[in-house]
Length: 566
Image (cartoon, rainbow, N blue to C red; front, side, top):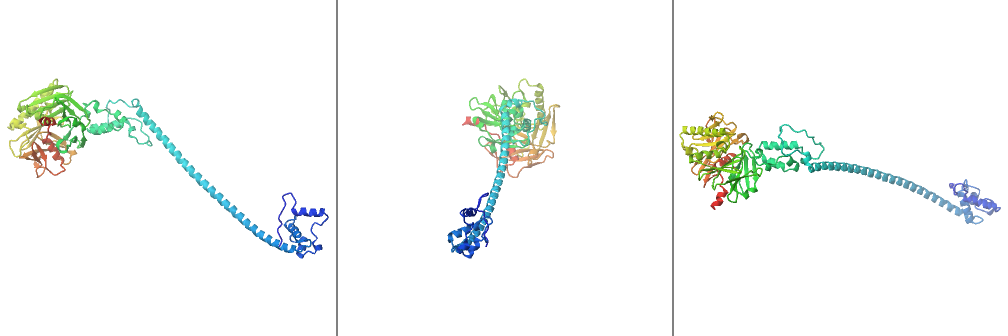
């Protein structure tokens, strides 16, 4: 087997075997040992002749030959065996070298794989970091936009006087919106930044339907909305902030300072908590939804309380010490006019916030004016000093026309305007109920049949009506009112609802104005009289017809009178 020739010298140098040969030649010896002369073995001789172990450049074969010669003695007797051993070692080294080469190759492959994996990891990690950086940049931009919007809102709130118009403004056409710039669609939803003309439009829509409680709630949203709308407490006599056609159901749902209000024009039902009522004596309520209160300190001056705005109108007139006080409130004049009736002395108190006027009437005329007050007609029947003569003349003419109808029916004036509830089945129990119907005087005469008359002030004529359109009338010996049947589906239009008493019970009756058909609302008794009140005995929940009928025949007791009695 021929050993591979391995270079044992550095580049540009000589091999170790070449240097040995030169030294031998310098000493006068041959370059290779004279093995043949020494009796060397055939293997040694073969090696010495430059056999298969000889390298091209004095390689590994020459080195091994010198090594064998050195260790085998001069004759080379032990060199053959040593050479065989060396050849076996060379084969083993060759195998080891191959294994080493394989290991080196595997290490190279492993290194390549590791480098690729690490590179892949770096690429993925970099991609993730780039994605996270993009998200972070988006978040930073969003935060910057929000900060800019917040700064704009703060600037608007910090300087409202420079941006907003004055509170008291000229009312414009509500069907036309302003031309304020529209907010961008990407801006954050913020009700305080709503355009002010839109805020006013919403506020005016609440006032148009007399939903003053919604108007008050709107003003509590934020400073901008309050500044853009009028404050009802700055002018408590402003007509747009006065309740209209609201009634307060006293006895049915009242509990402490909580009450139930119903709007007879829109059908709205409102539960209201009024803690201020505990500071006064509650005397009575009006047909427009006001509370009449009495100061707790003598002389117990009257106070009119608006439950929708919380405003109080002070009056100087003392509240009469009556258990059942009849009152009326009129805002048709320069100052509000409060009318209080004292049945015990047939006296009527007419008061403005700074003046008092009293009128004494005969018992017959007192019943007439009492009916007018109960029907919210006080402003049309008598007028304060300085009022127009035409209005007073119209009131006198109306009284004359109604008196002519009374005479034609041959009815006693005391019974005709009596405040006692009608008795069922009595032929001569004819009564007159007066009420305000859309600014016009309406006289309803209840006998065996129901007749309705409307007084036209322009012509001075009392017209007999056969229709009241989509309205219904509720008659009672304490109050009378008209409701819009489109807002109350259970109430039939063009009908009159009233209550007839039979002993200690009462029933609700309905009369159709057009065909004059009369029928009971239910087969059972609707009310039972307990002391001076008619209490509903029907199954709960009560219908709106039962509640309105109860409102017209019951009136709450004055807390002032009850306090003085006890």
